[in-house]
Length: 577
Figure (cartoon, rainbow, N blue to C red):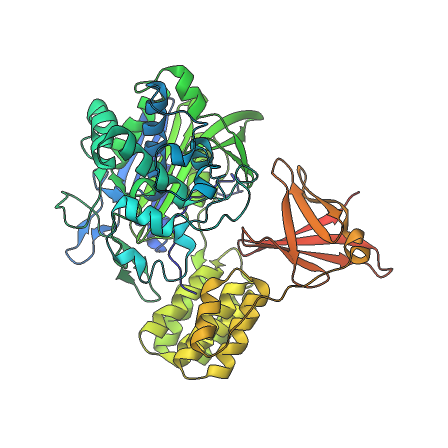
């Protein structure tokens, strides 16, 4: 499945060893690093870096417009994606300060048309912290292919796409969600009597002099606006159209790296709200994977020179763009990266830049093996290309690859009607990532295009075995004449009771398993408890987050470990208790 997501990233800093010379100064090292990412087609955009409260580096890389060969600069405007949520949370907190909104108020206090069974339970704070339980509209089948290309007024969109049945009881867990922030935009409009854009201009943009920041829409002529692209096997393509009314308060702003830095400094210096409210904004309130989520920000810590520092960060992704805003306030360090070729490894780049600023070791990126795979397909054949891939993939120092890159290359050939090559690449992805539901889904789609319906049905079913939440797979099976229903598997207490215990995945990260009758629950360190549902007697999945857990016994039948499958990773955990 080829899905473009509006989502946010959580950064885990991993500092890597490197043979890099330390005779260069910091800006030179940063420039050399970013040029290497540019060379490998891993970064195309703008960057700004501050250290000790001063900007030490800002420049553009690659092209803002590939058709006219116009370069990116530090004053190029990019779509921010989910960094918009910081601005939405600020507007809400400004209304809280003016006593026009209370965080404990419910959706229906401001949007009387909203369905009462949910709106009477979900609070403003739950919307801010992604704990509402309302499904994210960006996860709906056909959203990006169809719905996202049409205009909707905010209230109409909320009624139709942000009012589905709850995924979980409000306030009981974190699940990153665009619907919540879309609803917050609607509440801002109803309380202020202004459009979201007008409220933004009046309360944030004009007071801070953010002249290069605004609410994006397709019709407006915006000076120095970057075009959005997506990487293909052989180059780039123009990113699919998206009506910017739909990211709305969850993702519709544009800005420059300089203007976003002004925004960061305004927040750190309490320019828009008294410190009391700014402290509220930056207080981590709910466990969010391996992080904490505040109001529109992820809150983390990083260890530098054996000291712990708080980090404020958020990322964004929207058709053709991805972004990151990363702040270590105690050190006056800021990294802002904007990309207009989508899917850039901004976490890795940020990690390396933070290493440079703090005298840590770092290393350059490896070459994307998928680029070499594509070159060999074009020069020789798909068979020779795959043989070469299998020989080179073991050299981890020189080459890198991942599921997403292989998937994109497969779709490049599928769209070019080179079905044989697409099918072979998707099969290669299955070879490399056999535990991923998405690789079977993509392979099934190619088979379906090729008229191999039996194979398509088989692989869509395999995808659903691994991820019963793959709604698009169910829809595709319907088109193939198969009415697929997720099997309700019951595993008896006598079996699942053996899995009770604690499993250590990392030194300070443990998953605790408990059982209640025939129900099994998991709770990771610092996170809320979730219920798991059986795929088999040994493998279970989370209905909300795309994650599975599998339990393994030793030769004596005693449970010795579990493996967490999430984000294309396999994370084993030894049973320690």
